[in-house]
Length: 76
Image (cartoon, rainbow, N blue to C red; front, side, top):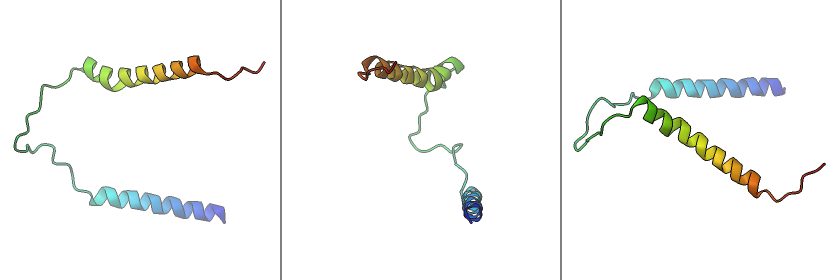
């Protein structure tokens, strides 16, 4: 009985996702708005630094702080 419910839930989720994709209107990113003044584009290095290196660095900083400031006793 659980398998049937899981299959039904998967079918509903897939159907809902498909309908949302089919009925959503495309983004109109090519049309400029009044007052729109985009700046210069980012280089590949800037993009990788901003969207890959910075989040990974912040994550590693948080992990390091948690490990250093962990006060629990280690089990041996």
